[in-house]
Image: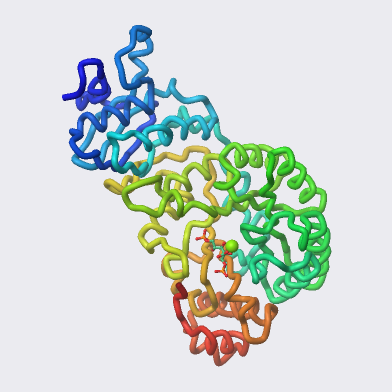
Length: 435
Ligand code: CAP
Ligand code: MG
């Protein structure tokens, strides 16, 4: 039992039944040495809603009724229900300042992981979600054949001049790829200025569209030091006819994504969300926040595409997790997975376009499609294109050949007999899963 001036247990109520428009959060926790479970879950619910460490003379009935309630728990999991009134309509930063703020730093809580939250319709109605999402496959890229959107990052990941970058763009566009993508750490450096890259890639895009009759675009990174500069870069992309912008959503933050989403809608553009830094937040099983919940927020905030892992490439993220996140960002009514995912009705919010990236190459294409259970995704292949023995153009062709082979029910070996570029890629990498 706590100190006489504490009231954390007021926030534990297993008789409480969450209201329809309560926001419910599932946490995993580990009590600090000597702390009882009820004292820990009381702190989690208290500090993330209206409470603090001591009883208050300023508390009144109205405010008291706004407290969160830990209404279900075990030795290491707790569900907390939050009255809707606590949350500013449409603000992801304010939501996180509550349910993912101070509670991580409390001495009584040794470890804490935010697993998921059920966002009520009354909360999500203030968000517009993706502008295109998965619809982009047909509405932007006008795809009829394999519905896989192919993107490639020039590698080495930074250092190329804008001319070298644009030359690679032309090579992969004419090799059959839809998109040239900036790397997450390419923005506006001396060797590759943003404006010059936009101008030169637009020229390569136009030339390739002319020659192939296909829609080509780019995920050019508008990650900037200020939102004002980010908006300026987005407008420049629009001026050059690009349909997408790319944003590192975690290093820029949720207000940046919500600002970009508002502007993207005005300009009828789509957002390719890169998740660089996510593993600093989601990698530990017992502390931080799940990629599932990050993905949920990205969909709510209006990102169209989101990297969610490959299950077979160089980045961590098991097949089961990739599938669970895939369902979350493309589903309409998402089912609960006990202790791993809460139910979610997405209502009017469109499905996103999932992005598989990280260590991919032609030899991994079949395994990747098996993980996702669909080919209607965006795949990003960097090293697996530009490491091809015959160069980037052949590398792009080899990936496209592997996609077609999968669609035609050919094994990679059978297809290698048909496609020389694919054979060369398989000779170099086989079906290795790089680390
Ligand atoms: C992949 C990549 C992507 C990662 C991000 C890189 O390059 O460009 O940023 O996929 O990870 O820089 O590593 P390769 P995730 O194709 O050469 O591996 O997609 O898991 O967020
Ligand atoms: Mg990258």
